[in-house]
Image 1 (cartoon, helix red, strand yellow):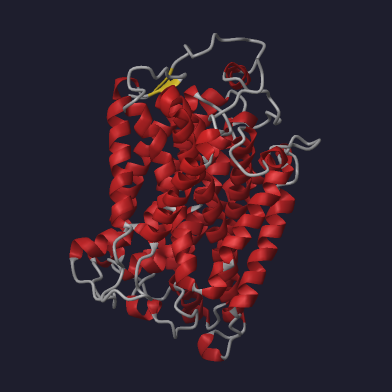
Image 2: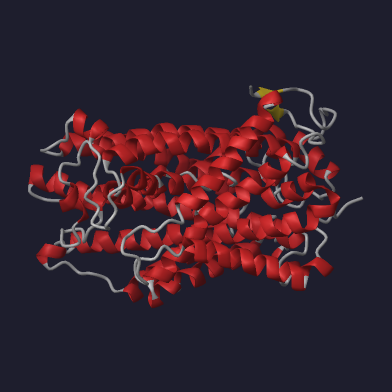
Length: 518
């Protein structure tokens, strides 16, 4: 099904890196430093997927909607379809290894007539989705710091300090500032830090999945972990299927961000093979270690209502409460649990750092083709061959997105929904063009799916269409202004703005990807 053939879209060369040569053939200069190995490329995507980040952040959602059955079996369902999406993206990445990634692919696969609009639509969904990912990841770290402070000062029931929303947003701004400074370093340093991040995620998962259930004085039975379905969600939803679908969000939210491997291809050696390997390996390894983490933590779950109760010591943060109570019940102190939360916090920090890296490369490539306001400013690189302005732009916009939390957490959640649905729409668009308009004209690179490429592509596109509808459904009844799921409003708003700007202005000047060498 999958092959890494020696025959590529380019003749092989012993003197020129295959990714470099292919980039030149596509019409682009080598402006970024090509210094990343396959391991480093994998590390960026793996760190952004970061099961410690996604699962920890949305474990509450999984417990509330379906409980163990949703988080265990939903993980494999979402993981299986995500792998198919990743395989289709990897095949296209092998043929077009550029930092532009998805929007460049759409332009090439949609054909000359539709190329400008296809790349415009895909590009804006991709870049806004990426900024939303960074905003949500770093905001979740700010919230984690808030919970750590709360538990360290006695917990909610012991007079612990609860940080205000203004302090949380200050934490968020400080985190983004650190990420921008780190991403201003050369790619060699980022490669080194990225590999540490990947190792931290893997080791952290295995330590926590063994430590937490081992320390806990009460553990769930295997029957509970693999068969218990929680219908007591308190949201007025009784349908078993409906509940299970809502519980899938934890898994699908976690398994995003692997397009980073594509955005890093202009800095990756032999990118036409190592870029696809980075996409596939980051998804596959995340599915495996993620299952271990979910399994270990779920064995420490014995009372779901208590974990979701906003009046518990962690203020309703389920995994924080699990860690804290596990150590407190055995040793009389929850300090060990707080340390474990620190391990997760570091993983989230690395996740946000890698997310800014990916954002900046997408902004660099998109502005190189003139798609962004003040494009000439954002695609500049410094002496270390880093798109420094794009780095700081990405950090700034992500901070502005998080400011919506000060006005309304509903508005913030709507904006963050673009991080899952908006990003997956950007993933699906080039795949859709590959299996329709470019079905017969697509020229595969060294990595390809052979005769199964079209079938896998169609399944990937259909899956994205399904989750786009499912995750737009109401999450509570009766539906009110406070309980309305604003995901379709946010994603629909982005679509309307993107198409409107195209119709009113961009169609007169945006021509899609622009080559900068003869």
